Length: 367
Ligand code: M6R
Image (cartoon, rainbow, N blue to C red; front, side, top):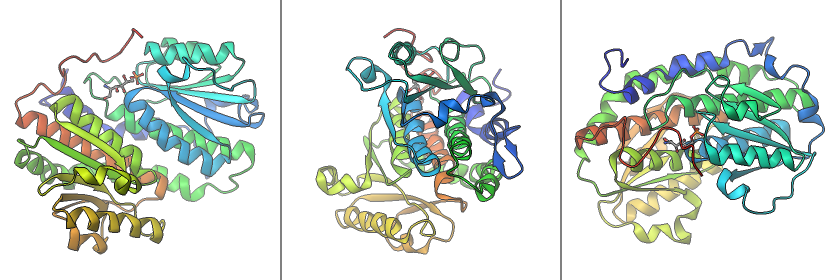
C-alpha cells in the first residue's frame, strides 16, 4: 500500500527519519552503543586482525562508508569487496577475519555465496540485513538487523540509509568492545539527532531539488563527485539515476578528477559535488572547493550539496542544496537524501515508473 504516495519510492524516501530512528532504537545505553544481539559475541571483534565487508550494488556503497567508520572507531583494517568478486578469487582469510555482509533482502545470491565461502574458509561472519529470518542472516554467526521496514521500490533508499546507520552502530559497538572508543557520547548524540535532521532535509530541500530535476529532464549525463565518506555517496547518487531515470551517470572520488574524468567536462555538463563540512577538516574541504573551481572553469554546471552556512562554495556553485551540520561520519545519511529525490523527480519528469525500472528485479536471487 503506497499510503497516498505517488510511488513506493516516494513513500520510502519520506520514511527515512522513522527508519533510522527504528534502527537506532534499543542500541544506545549510557552514552555508548550496545547492540543487544551481539551480547556474548565479543570474540567476533577482539580476536580479529581484519574486516572484509562484502555486498552488491547500493549495499556495497554503504559498506564503503562502513570502512571509514569501523577503521576510525575500532582501529582494525577494513576492506570492501563486491561479493561476486570476493568469491571468485583466492582471498587471504581465516579465523582472524570478520566478514561482514550487507543485504537489504538477505537473499542476494552473490552475497549469500560470499558468506558461505567465507565460512568455509574459517572466517567469522556477521550480516547486516533488513529482512527478518532471511537466508543470509541464517548463514551468518551474527546478525544486526536494520529496521527500515519493508522496501518495495527496486531502487533502494531507506534500506541504504539504515545500512549506513547500522554500520555506524557496529563501528561504535566494536570500538567499545575493543577498547578503542572510551567515550562515545558525542557520536551517540549525533546518532540520536539524525532522524530530525533527515526530516529537515526532506522538508526544506524536497521541492527545490525536484524543481531542479524537472529543469534537467533532458540531460543526457550527470557526474557526481565526493571525497572521504562523500565518495560512496557520489557512487550511490549515480546508481540511483542510472537505475530509475536511465541517464548515464558516474560517481568519482573528487581527487581522481585530474587523473582522467576531468576530460569529460564540457560546457553545461551537470556535476553534483558533495562538499564535506569545513569543520571536519579544513584541508579536505579546501580540496573539494578547488575541485569545484577546476570543473567550473571548464564550464560545468555545478550543483553542490553542502552544510548550511558553508559560504566558501557559493561563488562557484550554480545551485546549492543544504544539509544540516553533522559529524563527519553522519553526513552521508543526510547528503544522500537530495540525490534520491533528484533521481526520483527526474524519472517522474520523464514519465518513467520509478518503482519498477526496466530490466531490474528487487532481489537478485541468481548469480
Ligand atoms: O538486497 P540486497 O541489499 O542484497 O541488494 C543488493 C543490490 O542488488 C541492490 O542494492 C541494488 O543495487 C538496488 N537496486 C540499488 O538501488
